[in-house]
Length: 253
Ligand code: NAD
Ligand code: ZN
Image 1 (cartoon, helix red, strand yellow):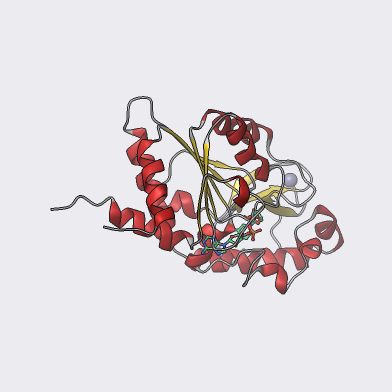
Image 2 (image 1 turned 90 degrees about the vertical axis):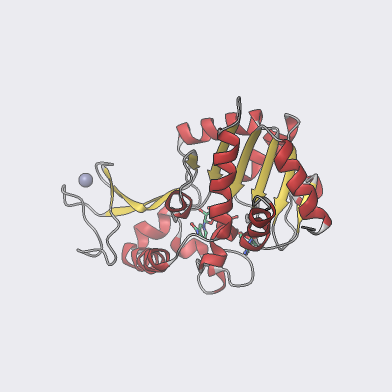
């Protein structure tokens, strides 16, 4: 099995690592049909982020924001995990089975596709589109109904519920951030897949890893601010690239 040089490097890096941390972004779900925010078919081409994914936008026009989230929930509900999600499950299984092996998946995605694929040690940095949180009493619950009924959804206390995601200008959940920073600092290989690496503080996790001497690998069809720092860059799509690795690691007869 011969892979392009960079993918060959990736394979070698993956097989020698003991402590792997992966950071994923919207690009990992693009081949499942979930649009990214930035990039060719990015959502922000049609909508303005500041109109939809901020606390101010929700305060101004909750129905508009909810309609956009309802549309995304429907899209994600129909989507299936792809070969990239599956390859990360297999990688976790392989690493976790090794003595002293550690695998942590840090995701900026709110779609839940990693969990649906079977990933276990997932840290959700930006929340979940399937969780709803009360704007008055902070009660939170999981709700996978598509469509939501009533719409927009309300809490038992009668106040409006909001999507359980982190909006622009909001802090990350403290516990998740602390766990993510610790996992990044302890990784010997840090793999960044399908993120524009522009949204802070998530984008600083690869730098934390690099400062602690991890090897940095990027999989993305387009350059990002991390590309120049990476020890290996695979300019390809997530499912295509990681899918090939899955085939490469299949036992041969
Ligand atoms: P982003 O839209 O800013 O960047 C997407 C990146 O993915 C780009 O660098 C693009 O080149 C790359 N990409 C596109 N197709 C790809 C593919 N097939 N394989 C690999 N890479 C591909 O997304 P982001 O970096 O995740 O950050 C923005 C924010 O968007 C995050 O906060 C996240 O919560 C949110 N978001 C989540 C989802 C989701 O849950 N699926 C979707 C859109 C946005
Ligand atoms: Zn309430």
